[in-house]
Image 1 (cartoon, rainbow, N blue to C red):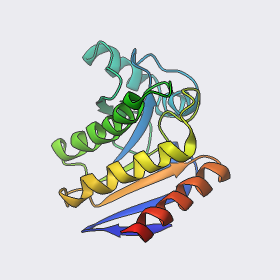
Image 2: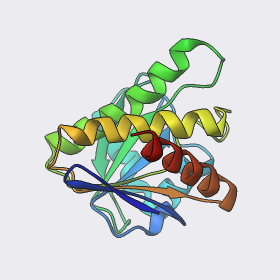
Image 3: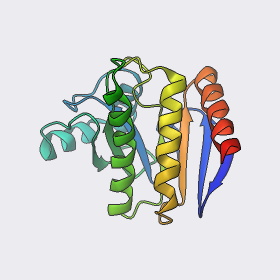
Image 4: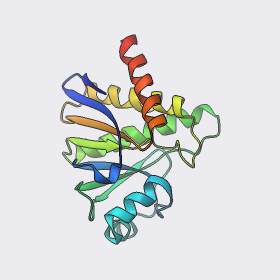
Length: 179
């Protein structure tokens, strides 16, 4: 599914984020930037040890709700933006932190003149963020950012399984219908 947001494109696809031919991919990282399971592990396996070496050399971790950037290693993408979403607790702060993780990632794109990025569904795996709520936060945050940032031409959500894709598609339809 694809929609236009001002001068940019927002699309949702089902697939493997490590195979995207795009300038940057977002990574659902942990605050220690230590690698892990899920999408984080897949990105580090596909990108090779250079990504971890760069993380260790440049950063001493990353606070929840923020993001850092490295090269893409062996990936097709030139950059990886490591965003740290919250572990779901049910507090109102969770939504702020999740939104901030996406926004900080997009700010890094703007700063580094990156015009396209693919995101996974941050915090919805082992961090247990409810998928429906997380999809709304992710999509609304990206759409809001794109209104004032035409330098980002494409934001693609690459969702690993059909259920996640379906939830994001339903949420995007609801948001665009309400506008």
